Image (cartoon, rainbow, N blue to C red; front, side):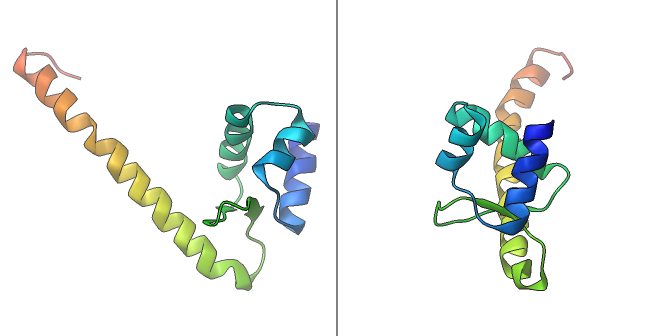
Length: 98
């Protein structure tokens, strides 16, 4: 948890690339994304669309990017839920419930 606190402190100050995050934590790319995912559950993490990294929104100046990030998350969530339609149809067709 101490490592996460350090990452949070850095992300509150500046952008951190995924490569830098991997190096700092000594982990794989997938593990670095999991760390960001966990932090994003309690902090307003902005993933920069140009792929340059992540940071935590802390000022009014971050508002536009925070709105964009929230809209992207909502869009992804809708797309993931669409994948359930065929599964639900199949489950219903055999008389079961999900």
